[in-house]
Amino acid sequence: MLRITETIVLQDWEVTEQFIRASGPGGQNVNKVSSAVELRFEAARSPSLSDPIKVRLKRIAGRKWTKEGAIVLQCDDTRHQARNRDIVRDRLKEMILKALITPKARIATRPTLASKRRRLATKKHRSTIKSGRGRSSSGFEGDTE
Image (cartoon, rainbow, N blue to C red; front, top):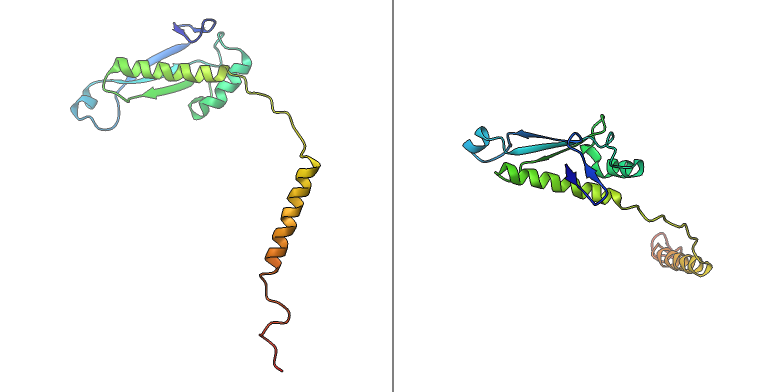
């Protein structure tokens, strides 16, 4: 049982952990000890989370979300199995807490008339500056008098 908030508690069947061998440096210890943790959370089937939370969680999880609707997290940061387990559980908790926050709805606004006029005046000013950079019609080249 994993407690996220006072109201959200994940049951044991929703979260499964598997201990695997870590990759990378570590010498003989890496080859012998299964210290890395792979946590699988059945998010789509979870009765603890509402549908809007699941949608936000899917967006937050990204590639960690599987086709079956599970979130798979791995951790092999430390040499200690218990510490890796705590880290991966904290990551899951952070993801769910982030999904609980409902995004603020954006209210569409229109630009003011004064801001439109300022923008057009700036564009006209830049246009005159840039047109003055070109060659003039009464230039030195081509005049053979």
